[in-house]
Amino acid sequence: GLERFSHIWLLPSFPLNTNTRFVPKVHPPRLRGRSIGLFASRAPQRPNPIGLSLVRLERVEGDTLHLSGVDLVDGTPILDVKPYIPESDCVPGASAGWTEDAPFAAMKVAFEPRALEDIAAAEARLKTSGIRELLTQILSQDIRNPRDKAQNKEGRDLGFFLLDFEARFSVSRGTAAVLRLETGSKMHKKERRTPPA
Image (cartoon, rainbow, N blue to C red; front, side, top):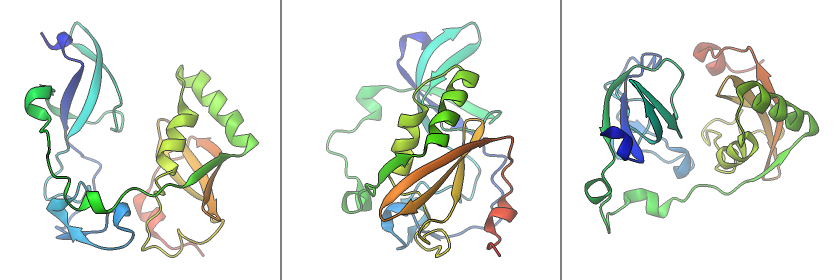
């Protein structure tokens, strides 16, 4: 009967989360450097490695679920699947807490010619579309850590992983410019936390 639902909840386990200590306060990007209690956020630094993700159920084929809108790394273990039931999962008039006072940033996003070529190649390789729009949605929210002075230096080459590539970008005068997409790179958390020379 799951195929009759348009959306489902996934409860994933995050085995790649290397946080080893409980951090009671976190700094969500929307708060631009201010802190909030961990349980008043969706930060990944949880006392347990369990997540919650709402995704669209495209179709069911045998014991395989075809999903879209998934924000998980390939191979992430799924602990449970639950149907999204609008009448009980959506509460009319619910309070959004501190997020009502802290809207996402609205940054302009531009694309270098090399990035447009890389996007076309990635869409052909992955047999998908909409990568440019997805990158625009992500970067328009200014994903840089406001507490990291190195990340906020004008023109600095930054990156994040998405699908099977690393999106490289820089920010100057309030505009995030997508520079290129790099494939074959691997994320090493320790290296990324080491300040550049």
